[in-house]
Length: 332
Image 1 (spheres, helix red, strand yellow):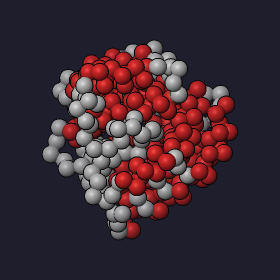
Image 2: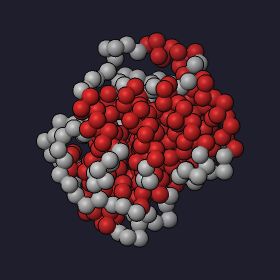
Image 3: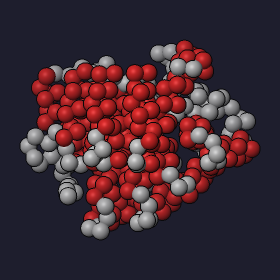
Image 4: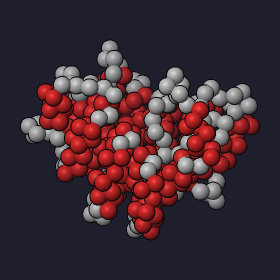
């Protein structure tokens, strides 16, 4: 666990919570991810205070970070967010997903309660989070946990909403997994709506771990699904893969005005992380378009900051104590 001085913690708190009233959104994101990296109880308290903000984009990211920190002390605030039916569904869904990431059996009753929520993305997230907690406590899940050690270097450090398919849980994929037949089989599971979302997510993260252009194409086929939650997770996975091969599919999602805001926002941030030259004009366009939903415009602002980071000499993005160059900020 990283440690910082009280004055540095206060500086991060002031930035994240925008106490001066003039902190740009992307700088608040950097403060958030710096706090996340601390994995401390103090950081949990600071992040939890941010749910009073008006930005759904920021609040959804707060919930995500609390889940990644895996601190059970965050569960009460996450439960309050999920129970708040006046909150943006994108934020409530992320709170439910964070509970799945923390993976406490104590969260099962509330997640089961909201399996009948009026919002589809919230319902589906609760379904996946329940399956995730149950898997973590299954024989396979326990064996996987026991197989990990401090010296294990994971392909991805994130706590995912579902584990990759068996055989692709950890380590370098075997030749048969990256074969055309193996990818076709996983694509079949990814697109099979008769399977549970949890099983389809397992195929999704298995394809991520393979990471070849053929795997990217298989994942992109999932953008034809009816579930906004499912499509937003594919865009998130592309943001992890950072493959330029996914850029055309992500641009198509960003520019589709009929697509869910939740999916388009995730596509924008993935494009910012990939950071290739051709994406910047599109991000600037959608940040400036007054007819674009606020969450899309704000995501493009954050994505441009990510793009600039990827094309700079900065060592890490989570440098909320550093000095960032101001750009235009998107507000309601």
